[in-house]
Length: 187
Image 1 (cartoon, rainbow, N blue to C red):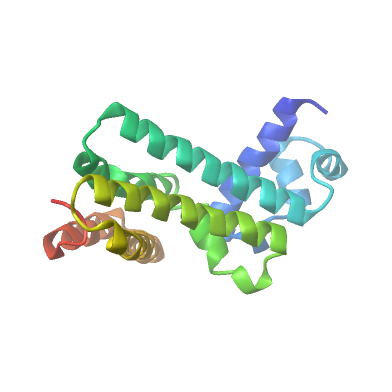
Image 2: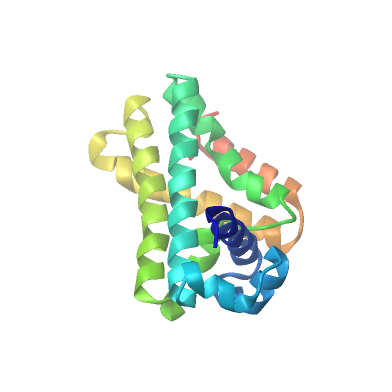
């Protein structure tokens, strides 16, 4: 089976997990979407846990690359912090989906260990990036940066959840505006 089939499986699994979480991953449905036999998925992913871990790993790796690209575009950490909510907004723009790892985090008690590890890595990558920028922007001390970064990460994920539950992206935008007005995010 080609690497393009593997990529198609990962892409379909990402879309499914963003809409239905880990519990929504089903080899038969994914095979139908990709246009292959369900048994063919096992060639690349011997189990649902292997697929879940791979898709979550790819998701946090892609997000980390996106965050670093944002930082490379501008050396201004405040501007990057202002743009950070755009990362989560994109999922809502894509058929009212959620951040894959936020969705899977809600299922953490039911996740296999390998999947849980990758989901937690997503949060760690985001918090580390935010923490680094908060210090670079002189918005908080290095001693308090991780706390503030976790608050920002949790708040933005929460705004996404509320907007998704109401299928209203404007609710996400107004919540982010309120975070800025309250001082959680730079104006």
